[in-house]
Structures are given as C-alpha cells and as structure tokens.
Length: 166
Image (cartoon, rainbow, N blue to C red; front, side):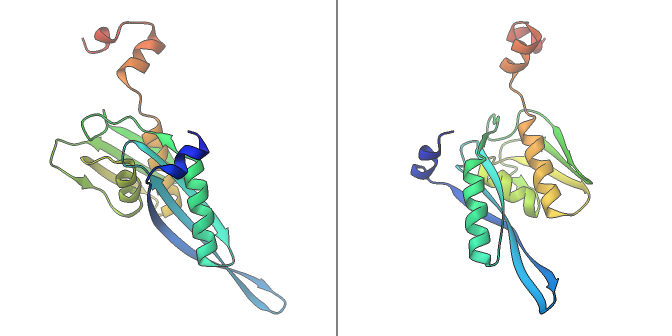
C-alpha cells in the first residue's frame, strides 16, 4: 500500500500494551517505555507496530507510524476467515477458526484488537502456550497472513478453481 493513501483513509488504531522498562546506570534507574499498537481499516487491512521511547506518548506515536507502514491485506469471506489456521511465534500458539454469521468475535486481549482492526466480525480463537502479548500478536499476524484464497491455491497447483472444491 502507498504511504499517502494510508493517511487519507480512516484507520482504527488500538493500543495493545504499554510496557515500562528500566536501565540501571551509575546514578540510578533510567525509565523508558515500549508500546504495541495495531492499525486497520476494518475492510481487511491490518498492521502491527512496536515503538520504544523515553515517553509513553512518543512510544505510542512511533508504534502507530510503524503499524500504518506495515499494513497487510487479509483474506476475508462473509465477515470471517475462509478456513481454520494456526499461527506460531516463539512459545505462543494462536488457533483461529471461522464462525457462522452472528457469532461475533470470540477472542481475548491482543488477538481481539487485531481481529477487530482487520474487520473480521465472526471468528473463534484460542491462544495456547505463552501468554506473552508480543508473541501472541506476532503469532496472530502469522496466522492471518498464511490464509490463501481458492484462486491462489489453484494457481499454485496449476489446476482450475472448480477442481479444488471437488
């Protein structure tokens, strides 16, 4: 996506977490902040950003900028994902499953923020393994980016789309 087009459209920005970190120096402790943010247009595009700074607002601003530059298009069909998928990053494992219309977003914390920013309205999720928010966010994005449409799979296999469903 072009950088100019991202500024014009309305994006949903959501802070996933803000973390205070400290560095011990000779004079005492120096505090800094890190922030994880998701940005999406609720139409299938979503990105995540991680920013670090001495001030909370600067860390969030950096994270938002990175999230806008890291936007990816997600495959969505009938307000849900086309099929079940698992994403793994570090010790975190995230299971995403399509849901029937009217189910809503069954997800917790970091996964919910990404799903809502992407515009997915019906989905079932389960976070397994590590509860580290950073790894859960990255596992969720890996799962969403691994989704392929039937047309893409048919093209890779060199067969017509109708043959995939038979």
